[in-house]
Amino acid sequence: MFAKEIYQRRRAELLKQIDRGILLFLGNSEAPLNYVSNCYKFRQDSSFLYFFGLQDPDFAAIIDVESGEEILFGNDVDIDDIIWMGPQPLVSDKAAAIGVQKSAPLKELDNYLSRAISQHRKIHYLPPYRNHNKIQLNRLLNIPFDDLKKNASEAFIKAVVKLRLIKEACEIQEIEKACDLGYAMHMTATKMARLGMVEQELVGMMEGICAAEGHFPSFPIILSQNGETLHNHSHHQILTEGRLLVIDAGAEINSCYASDFTRTLPSSGKFNQRQREIYQIVSAANDLGIALSKPGITYTEVHLSVARLLAEGLKNLGLIKGDIDEAVAAGAHALFMPHGLGHHMGLDVHDMEDLGENYVGYDDTYRRSTQFGLASLRMGKLLETGHVVTVEPGIYFIPALIEQWKREGTNAAFINFDRLEAYYDFGGIRIEDDILITADGCRLLGAKRLPNTPEAVEAAMQQE
Image 1 (tube, rainbow, N blue to C red):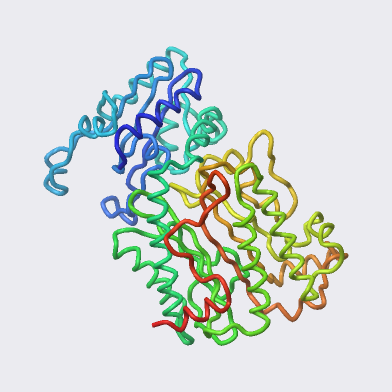
Image 2 (cartoon, rainbow, N blue to C red):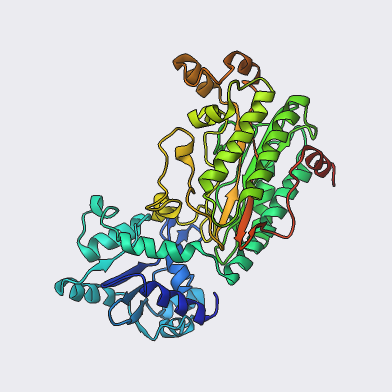
């Protein structure tokens, strides 16, 4: 938790963005794993956490836009809770710690909202993503389940996005901690990877780095020699000579700030010539994306510049042909990189994805493309000082996609399909770093950068 003044300032700034009504914040509840009292590790709703800072389950809050009144709703523990959990602070004490003057039992939220509804007041809420909160909203506001998402307040969404996208100094410090832990996770896997190991062994080591410090991964770890499957969570294969191991993983520390890195290793510890050629293209693309990122440029422009570099590199290998600008304009490069260059990151590894990517990564000026590949770019609008984004170019050889394009003649003027058959067993390569946009450019987050050249990767894999 940050100082209460930080939460007070955030809520005051939020009020400036909304004209009227009541802002309703629903915190998360415990989620049972296999029976009621055996739960998954609790994770607070990120927007509730951003404005109210409390990591405890079963809290809600309102802000009256017109009067400025703030109320924290939650229940004090009873003697049964104390027996099992020990003494706990009163709700009023928790409210005071975050600068909220008024608190009430959770059941009072029903009465408060009922009165507001009877007075025909606008009640703003954010799109729910957990079933428990969907049930709560259905009950509290009498909105059919199928209408909950579309009835979420666009004004509330835009106001939250506007504030959360610009990271404060205290947030950057937390993200740096998450990046340092993510570095430790990746370096452990890099040093420990050996032929004959099962992928799951490395996953367990990386999870253990988080668990040893009381944290956990920021998303289920992606670690696979089938790197052509972008989000591969299957870890059953044995590390085998001649294959590549894509590792996409990050940490979420207890403040809930995240990191997200990707590196690609040769399973044997040494790249062969074909792997080295592709790796060098992706590494150069990663460096270019970082070099170009600065305030005033759209991330779509950065993405397309990276795409041109990738296409040029693939043309030099005889896999792409024709004019590079025309090939990129046609989306031919997306055969090899069917995803976007990166995304916002903060309290969520895909920051505010629950609020809608088009609100987070786009706006009324910069709209999402419908072109294959470019449509998957999660962040396309102007970069601003204080943004935290990932830079994650990749090259993948996806046999099913190649065969479909070949069969349908998609971008046949730019693709040497016959030469691609030799790469059907290649897999993929992705390299990802996290950056902070600064006043005059950007900088890498975390005290150290993971190895990002073939030589540096091979040297790191030889370390004990």
